[in-house]
Length: 124
Image 1 (cartoon, rainbow, N blue to C red):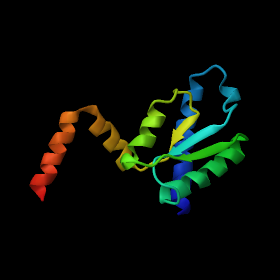
Image 2 (image 1 turned 90 degrees about the vertical axis):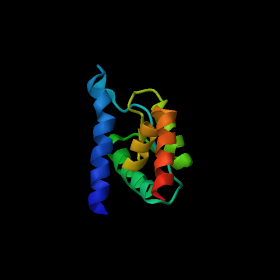
Image 3 (image 1 turned 45 degrees about the vertical axis):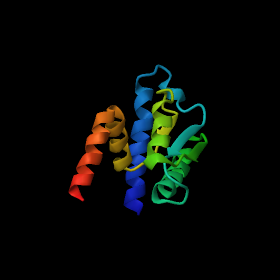
Image 4 (image 1 turned 180 degrees about the vertical axis):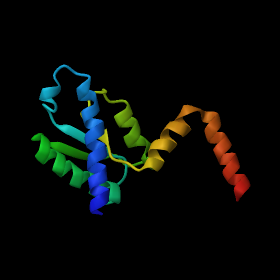
């Protein structure tokens, strides 16, 4: 569990820090609260890890880290909310690889979703 939390902390820190290198005011990041969206219900593994990592980020950065749960549609609601937020490094997502890859794959083309459903019916 500790390895998982440390890995998640390293990944979220890397993704949060990446936009700051492109900004002139990198030394002031973060200067407002950070939002971490968990696209699953509260109390699950992603939520527990996000809250643990959020607490460590809050201690390190000195800014509040707010964890929001946005469950529904297999994680697509939360993923879409973060995808539509400004790319400023203040909206992060804590999710599984499954929901990230499925979201981009299924949303890219409705015909792909139809093909997947056909394949699943055939496999049954």
